[in-house]
Picture 1 (cartoon, rainbow, N blue to C red):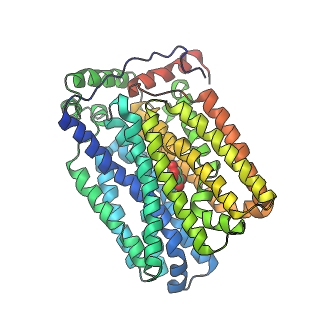
Picture 2: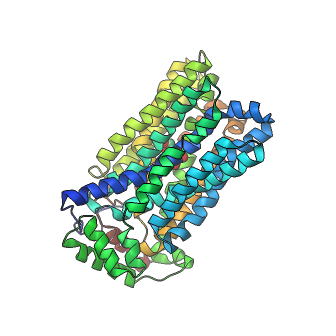
Picture 3: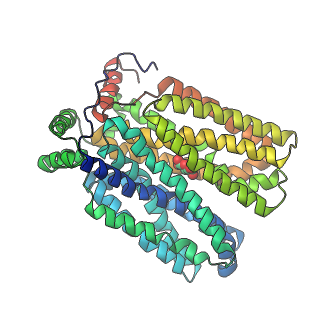
Length: 464
Ligand code: BGC
C-alpha cells in the first residue's frame, strides 16, 4: 500500500507546551511502563525457577510443563477480558487493579506450599500479564502527543525487555542459594510502584471523552500539556466519536475490518517468526549447537537479553523519525537473513559461537522492528470506540500464537530438524515482510483521529 496515496495527513494536533506537563507525560509513561516490566519479568522468571520447583514439589515432566505453561493460559484469558474492562471502567482503573493483582499473586506464587496453590497463583499472574500487555500500550498511546507517541508507547516494549533481563539476572543470582521463592516475590516491588503511581496519574482523556465526561477530558488534555490545543484535540476526538457505532460486530464492518485484519496479522507475525524460541530456549539451542557448557549457554542468553534492551532503545529513538514501516521492513528482512544463516550453520555443523552470533543478529532485527512496533501499531491503528475490543483481539492472537510456537518448538525440531525449523521461520519472515510492505500503513506523526479517518477509505471503496 502506498502510504502517500489519498491519505489525509493533517499536522499533529498537539505539541507539548509546559515543562510541568512534559514531566507528567514522562511520569505517566514511566509508571504505566511498569506494566511492561512486570509482563517481561513474570513471563521469564519461571525459566530459572523451573529446576528448583521440580525438586521441591517433586514434579513429573507433565506436571512441570503444566506449572510452566499455566501463566500463558492466564495471559490468554487476561487479554480476552482486558478490552472490556478498559472500555467499561477505564484504562487507569484497569491498570491499577492489575498492579494490585500482580503484587498479590506474585507473593502467593512465591509463598505457595503445594503445587495446586502455585498453579492457581501463576494462572492469575498470567491474567495480569494478559491485561497489562493490552492496557499499558493502550494507555500510553492515548495520553501521548502524536509527535512522540511512537517513542512513549515503545517504552512498554523497552520495559518488557528490561523485565526479561532482570528475571535472568535475579534467577542467576538466586540460583546458588536455590531460593526460587524470592525469584517470584521480587516482582511485588514494581507492582506496588505501579499501584501507587496509578492512584495519582490522570485517566486517558480520550476514554473520558468517550465516556461522556467532557470537562474531565478537557482537564486531562490540559494536564498533559496540550494547552489551548486541548479544546481542539477534544473536538477532534468528539467528531470522530460522533460518527461511530457501538458493538463488537462493528469490528467486522468494511471501514474497520481492514484495521482489524492488519492488527491480527501483525500480532500473529510477531510470534510465528519465532522470537520466543530464542527468548525461552536460547540455552537449549546453544546446547544443541555443541556449546561448551551450560554456564556458557546461560551467560550467552543473558547477553542476548541485554542486546534486546539496547536495540529497543535504538528503535525508540528512530520510530518517530524513520517511521513504523521502515523499521518493520528492515526488521523482518534482517530476521529472515539471520534465520536462514542459522539454518545453514546447523546444517553444516558449524561452531556454536557462530550460531550465537547469528542469534544475536536475529535479536537485533527483532528489537528494532517487530518487537516494539507491533505493540505500538496495535495501540494506535484502531478507532477509539473499539480500540479496547480490537486490541483485545490482537493481543489474544499474540498470546495464542506464542502458546502454539513455544509449545511446539521442540517437536518441530524433532520433525524438521534444527536447520529445517529455522528455515521454516525464515520463510515466515519473508511473508511478514510482504505483509508489512503491502498492507501496513504509516502512522508516524499522525493523530489517532487522523489514522481513524484513514481506514474510512476502505469502507467507501469496499476493498474488503
Ligand atoms: C513479545 C514477547 C517477547 C518479547 C521479547 C515482545 O514484544 O510480545 O513475546 O518475549 O517481545 O523482547
